[in-house]
Length: 290
Image (tube, rainbow, N blue to C red):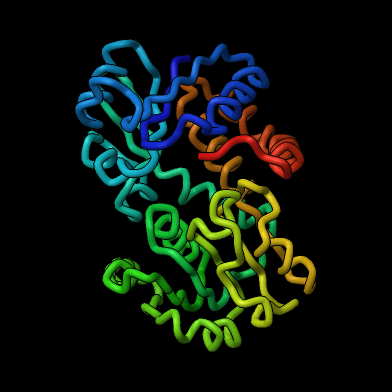
C-alpha cells in the first residue's frame, strides 16, 4: 500500500514510522513518502501533487499545513467530520475518485474517550484556532461541550471559528487573551492548540496558578510528549491528555480508511493502545515532529 504526506516543513515527521508500524502489525506492506512543498523541486500545487500520486498507484495521502482546506476542495466525497470542520488531512484514492476524511476530528474524539472515558468536556477554553484548533473545537462540540471559549492572537480567526461552530449548533464564543485567567477560573477543560510547548517553542501557554486539579487538559503539541503544560497540570493533580493521543488516534483512523479490507480495519483499531504506550515512551526525548 503506497501512502504519503503532503505539507510544508515535514521532513522530520513521525508519520512514516507510525504507518510503517501499522503496516507491520496488520501484515500490510506499506511505503510512506514525504512530499514537502518547501523542499521539493517542481512542486506546483496540491492538486498537481495529488494527481501525480493517483497516477502513480498510491492508495492515498495525508495532508498537513498549509493544504488542509484545499484538500477538501479536491475531494469527490467526504466524511461528515471533514464536511463539519471544513478541511481534510486524509485523502483516499479509489478508481479516480478522491474521498476526504478529517482524522484530527475523529482522532481527538477517540483520544479524549481513551484518556477520560465518559467524562463530559463541560466548559472548555481553547487556545489557538488554526487547523488543529479548528478540528479539536468541532470535536469538542461533537462530544457535547457545554461551552467553548476560543482565544487566538488573531481575533478575526477566533471570531470566524466561533461563527462556524455556532452555525453547526455548538455553543462557542470568541474570547480575549487578556481575560484568560478569568476564563480558566470558571472552566472544566484547558486545551492548547498553539505551538507553545514544542521543543522549538518552549513554555506554557496557560498561567500555572490558573491550572487546577479539577481541570482536564489537552496539549496538541507532542514533541515532547510531556510538555511544560502537561507536566505542570499533572503536578497539580489535573487529568491530562497529551498530544501523543491525537497523533496516534488520528494516524490509526487514517490507516483504517486507507485499508480496503474490513477484517484488517478491525485489526488496526486494536493497535491503538499499544502504539500509544510506545510513542509516549519514545517521544519523551523526541527527534521527530509533524
